[in-house]
Structure formats: structure tokens, C-alpha cells
Length: 69
Image (cartoon, rainbow, N blue to C red; front, side, top):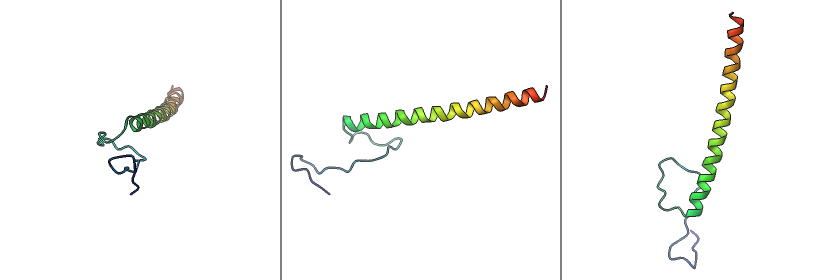
């Protein structure tokens, strides 16, 4: 493990992912900000996927409603 000569404790490796329920007490403010940004981007991606699926479902519903009249 690499040591920072200017720190009292060894450097910890940076986690690349976030786990729900993970202990956040060891993260710096910058690390927390990075995770918030990553999670906000993921939320936007999920909302886009949901909107796309909803549009497909609505189009299929409209098609079958017209066909059954």
C-alpha cells in the first residue's frame, strides 16, 4: 500500500462504485460529491429508459385500442 509522507495514515484506495447502504464516514467531501454526480447521472439514465419504455407501451396500447374498435 502506498504511503503519503504528509499524512498520518496510509492512503486508502479509491472505490470506483457505490454500494447502497455503504458506510460513508470514510469518504471525503470531494468523494461524496463525485458519487452524487455519478448517481444523478444514473438516475437521469434510468428516467430516460423508463420514458422510452412507457412511450413504447403507450404506442402499443393505442395501436391495439384502434385495432379492436
